[in-house]
Image (tube, rainbow, N blue to C red; front, side, top):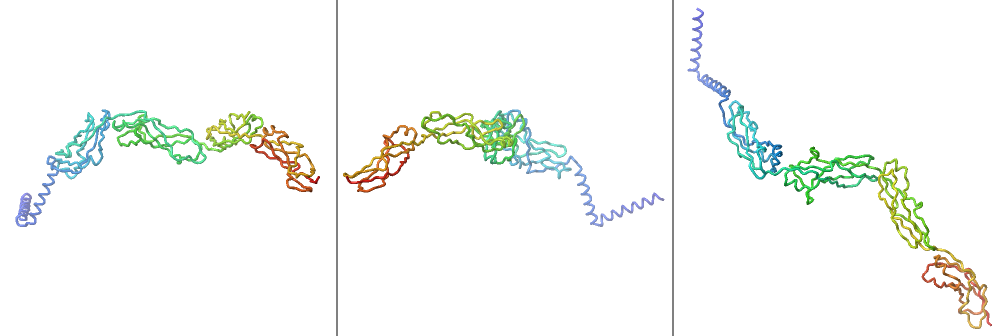
Length: 440
């Protein structure tokens, strides 16, 4: 009985479904949709079914860069994003990954290791087919134009140093050293072949005013034979196989102090007879000395290594004299000074006693009498000239011209014979003489 009951129930269910399908159209539509969903699901799981997909923004990568250099070649063309992007790719993609497939799944690339010669040429675009994402149908363009040059290395490119600005006031720098002093430059022959040196520029004003050793990383430029700066992203600058973009400048900073000179014993000897030293001057008057602060604190003056001999000199002159640098100093702003010795005639005073006074201009018929017939003359002038004079060179006169009978105080006038070209001063004692005139 149970079996019959189950059959009747199953038949009833089937009949009911049949009735729905035949007479209820909405259920027909639902059935169709269910069938489509089932079909799509089955299709999406079938890896053997593919669809074509086009990518218009594919990017090409570059491989084999190191390999081509080992062959002594290098690509000089710009292989930037603009050159390697915008490639069109068509691929046959499995239905199962159609939505996830991207251009990167096919590894578009150019392989530089396949290049064997220099010059202009075409680098073929390669790709990779995979079981997961299907195969490439077409790539456009099929190649990328490139220029290839020889890859060379020039060793021992010297590094020069240029300084700008000034050290902080009151500071001195020792000689500067650079590490490394030479560079190796690798790149295209057309570029490397023009490079003759590297030039680093150090701004001294950027240094801290502090005693001690200073190390500064200084960038540099590569300089061509015509003096222009060489710039290229294809160049590699190395030192002992390590890439370099700056050199290290080492120097030691010391404080400075202005020191004067001791005139003790700078000038020796005696000038010629009748001459004397008028003055001694030095240029410069002070020198900047550099050294450790504790050493500078102990110094006030500098001395010369040699003396200036004035023996027999009769005119002014200058001499260059080397300075004695104390061992505790590292530098003097100058190692010599100029000593100027001014030599002039010795000025002396000589007294000529009892020189006769003459009365001039007395009218005829008058008798004269003087309070003193003699006077002393004091001459001040060059010693050598004074030594050539005697009383005969001196003429003392009192002028009575136009005077009549009476007593007068007349000045005594002195004339020195042979003193026309000399500078001198004189005085007469007494300065005046009393003259009495009477008629005979």
